[in-house]
Image 1 (tube, rainbow, N blue to C red):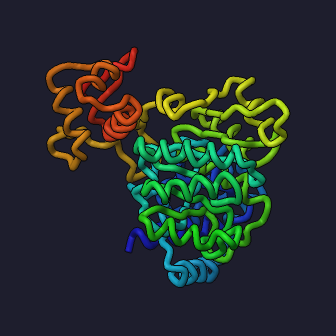
Image 2: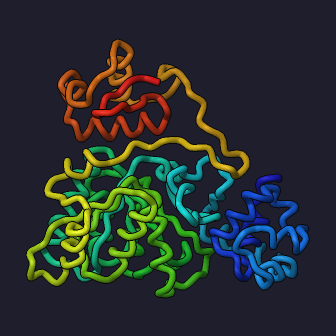
Amino acid sequence: MQNNIILKNLLALNLVSGFGPKRVKQLLEKFPDTTKVFKLSKSQIRSIEGIGEASALSLLSFNEWEQVESILDATKKTGSKILTIYDKKYPNLLKQIYDPPILIWYKGDIELLNEPGIAVVGTRNTSTYGKKIAKELTTELCKSGLCIFSGLAHGIDSVAHYAALETEGRTVAVLGSGIDWIYPSRNKGLANAIVKSEGLVITEYPPGTKPDAGNFPVRNRIVSGLSLGTVVIESGIQGGSMITAELALDQNREVFAVPHPINSASGTGCNYLIKNGAKLVQTVDDIIEELPLEENIQHSLPNDTLIKTLSWRELKLDELSKKICEQLEDSEYQIDALSDKLDISTSQLLVSMLSLEMKQIVTQKAGKIFQLR
């Protein structure tokens, strides 16, 4: 019952004029009890940095509770569910960005949002070269155990999602519309295939939201925010892929780019990114070796606590993770030495280390030296 009340209050906040994700987050950080948010005085609301007179009055006069119920009904009809920023399964990486979505509608396996993953993005008008590289890199990234995040758009996004499905890898599609309004429409089959293959389709927009052009640049912050890094396969100097790369940099995430011939119009954005510091990608190892290890940080929103550190033997781990922990019980290991010891590629080993680091089972020292916590 309490969770339902929280959900309704968050849906209501999503409807208040002048309150985007950032302001809602600021409001909840100062007044975490959602049952009291709509009972605050104007002075209390105005005490939050960035909230002016007009926005405060919008919150004070809010009375659209019928629309809240309507959204809940529409959500049920679409067969989707809603994840809130208060939920334990809300991804820590996404919480770290400037303006995380307060609500996420989804179909599929929500656990994927907390898996180590990489964003694969690019132009809608892709070349044969771009498609080839996108498929090859995505396939190798999936084989290395990474989840693929992208936007279900024409071109590179679609190639990446399809490659993940063909490899039986994990992929997450982030929409710029309602969960019931797949765009482009020709990708409805792709979206269904992602869900059926235990992948995930998500959006911050309520059911019925049309795919307006302005939604997609906003959507891109989620694609990059969920990812440890963003790979731009093919892009002109302007467009959604470049926006995603810029957002990734703002979020302190890694940015990778595939080089293109200097006379390739569709690759000018990638070459520009490389010229300005993005990591040049020739093989999947160029990506894997640069991915940062996740650190759990404490957030100020309620019901959000640090993961309790447990013995690795108390957790359900895959066989490779168990072998890693058994080796680290005896001694700390540099990544290459551990790779030799276990007779497994460094790329695959680094992905397992990412997962163990996120679970607070292992920690990394300088020189990629790992040890149990």
